[in-house]
Structure formats: C-alpha cells, structure tokens
Length: 424
Image (tube, rainbow, N blue to C red; front, side, top):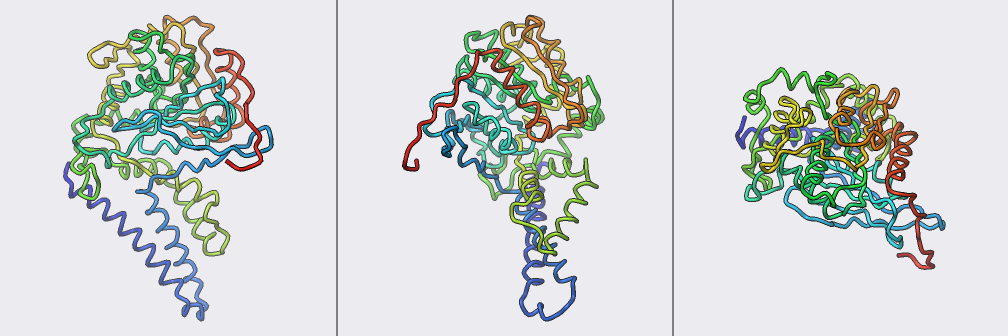
C-alpha cells in the first residue's frame, strides 16, 4: 500500500466521481430537455449536484466562517484570525475581536487531529467567543507538508502543546476535545514537572480516550484485533505528486472518512437519498442543514504515518498514558505531578467513540491533585458530537465548563467594547 500510485489512484477515484456528478448535473439540466416530462431528468440532475458537491468537499479545507460577534452595545464586532505561533505541522491561532479589551477568560481549545480539520470545532469556538479570548490549535494537512520538515508523532504533538501553553501563559484555561485529551493531559503533566510556572489554571477534557480499556467501543475493538504490521500495511500510503508533501508517509483522510461513514452507513445513506429528493423538488439550499453538516464532515485531512501509528500503539494498545508510563523526549511524564491545575472531565452517555469511563479515568491518574480541584460530568442521552458542538454542549455543557473556569480563575469581567459611529 505504501506507494504513490496507490494514493494517486484513490485521488483519481474521488476526482472521477466528482466529474461524473458534474457531468450528470450539466447533462440533465440541459435546457432542451425541459420540453420532456420525464421526472428522472430532475432526479439525475439532483444526484449529480449532490455527488459533485460531496466529492469536491473531500479535498477542500473549510473556512472558519466566523466574521463577527454581537456586542452588549448593540453593535457587531468583527473577528480576525491571527497566527500567534507558526509551526510546520500546526499553528496556534487567535480569534481576535476588534475593539474589545482582553477578557478575564483566556481559553486554549485543543482541536483533534483525527482526520478532520480544526474547523470541526467552529460552533464550539463561536459559542465561547462572546465570553472569552479564544485560541485554537490549527493542525495542518500532512499532504501539504514537505518531507524536509521531518517527522511528527505523539511526542512532537505533545511538545507542540507544551509550547502553545508556555506562549499563552499560566492564566490560560485549556479545553481538549476527543483525540487530544490524553496528550493534553500529558503536556500539562510535562509542564508540571519541567516548568511549573507555565501550567494552565484549568484543564477540561471532553470525550477523550484517556484509558481506552475502561469501556469497549468499535474503535478499541479494532485496535485490539489488528497488529501494528497489519495496520501499517493496509492504512499507510505515500502522498502523490499533486501535493507539496509528495513522498511523505501518511494515513490518508479519505481512508479515515471511509471508516467514519461505515460506522453509520445506513444513516448516511438515508441522509444523501433524502437530500437528492429535496434538490429534485427545489427544496434544498446551498447552506441547508444537510450541506452545513456534510461540507464539514466530508472535508478530511491526512495525518502523518508516525502520528497515526504511534497513537494506536502507545495510547490505545500499550495504554502508556493510562498506565502513567508515557515518555516525551526521553523524559518520563508523571501525571501525578499535576497538583494545582483544576481538572474536569465531560462524557456523553451514548458516546460510541469514547465511551463513558474512558475520559473520567484521568481523575484517577491525577494522584497529586486535591479532590476539590477535580470535577466530572456525564451528559445524559448525549453522543460524541453533541458534547462539544451539539445541543448538549449549547444547552448544558458549555455553561458548566464556563462555571468551572470561573471557579478556578476568579469572576470574569464584562466585555469591554467601544461603541463607534463608523464601521471597523
């Protein structure tokens, strides 16, 4: 599998499907055909439109789309995305609100590197922005990173987080969503041992696999069944000649997307079938609920082979973090060294990716942390996506997280926005 031809063949299949969709849409929409009464032409055009859009999204990095936020003075305030730290495999970015003084709450949102871009947390960022200064880890697509930039594995990922936390300072509150939860916990422990004054004030872990063996899921079952040699053989490919990362070994985003889709194949099939009928009836919109979700869901990015394989081997198979035996840059990371960073875990009762029990295991590992600095929450009826971006997040979890941050940093100040007569 580790050949450029395999990667390019997969991209060719995607490109062909996009072309077939565009062709079907154009042909079935030809004005002369409007003289016929065959309803299949509308169905064919609708199928082509949905197919072209879906396959085109797979290689497109989504835009954040956060232009402004409303202020208490009745004015909208523009939002700029600024790069705070620039690195080869990911940047630290800030959503800077114009004409607003620094907020009491400063939040570092650690985005997953599990096949999707950081924009998967768009709604999470938008919900936090009115009440906090928000910084996000914006990971890069491995296909676009030249081989000359070197490797990037779980230890490098952890050290990136350490650098980002040091840059933001000790008054930061960290929220890690899903995949980065165990590595963010390790980064915090690393700072506790090496640079205690740079530790964040609080750490919120949402739906992350701290101890994958605490509760079985399809993800953990797969990790147990397959050997590392088998996984490397079936999952790793070399980036083709079309991209800057030509020759780099990666776990392709398209393969990860295939895994995502297969987990709920019936639901996705129904969603696309219904969308085709809506398009045929003229009831669909460019930014309707289906397109808003799938424009993001289908946009996938490649991960470096070393990051993907080391995550499976060290986090899932060997459970190095769960057993408190994780090593970074030759130094053992002792999670028990965390003694003053408040830690909160959030889990969803119906989470089928990181089942309840996997994330809360972090609290047991924090043996040096007083009980009053530990908190946990299990959200009833919530799935994986809902606990950080869905209804459960909006209505219940977000207020709980902000209260936890305030309890460990002092009351936040009111937004200080200046009313002006001209637009910024």
